[in-house]
Length: 164
Image (cartoon, rainbow, N blue to C red; front, side):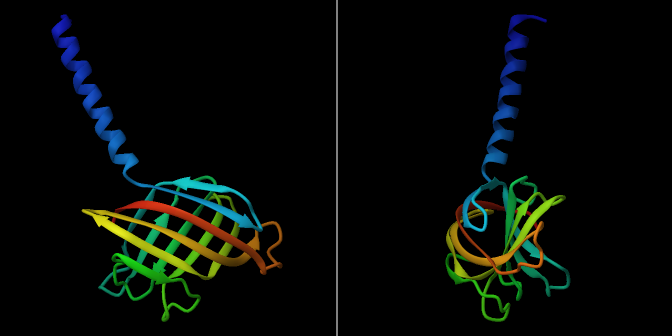
């Protein structure tokens, strides 16, 4: 193989790798917990409507495949989240709900539902949704499921990509 062909091949590979890196780095989230557990949560973020026939819920998923844990925001009426501030409530009819799962999806170590908090959608850019959140949650650790009163505070930010 001549030098010119090798350079073009390497350049093409660099473009493909750079594009793949940009695609995966566009979606991210990072959050920190305190209270019942102190940990950092990181991973990818996505959003969209789940369920069919227009009666589905709007879901923002942070860290679905992350080993440390995930945060799920759900708007039961299916309306998309647009820039603004949303109260987190336990009652789906009164606001957005949030659930924090510690551990991986296959080996969860705890589940905590938001009692209160704020989800702020700070902007949109094409298929990207930017925002930050503050959650005051209550729940249980997997090793002590009878103790459902453990408090967990979660603070974080994200850029999510549309996936549904």
